[in-house]
Length: 77
Figure (cartoon, rainbow, N blue to C red):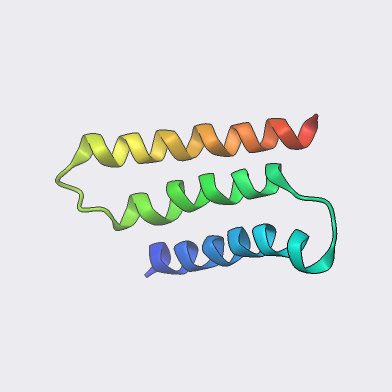
């Protein structure tokens, strides 16, 4: 249940960060988009994947961490 809620929440956040610059005529937020995507992979999709494929789940989690850290790094710059 928690994985579905976090997947839905971070998907809404990701869509909002991608749509807001087009609709509201504001500056794009690539750092926030990457953080939302990383957290979506880490907390949402990785939990929804079948646990029998451990390597794939681990790869999705590590990919989510790397993407989120890249987003944080872009926000700092």
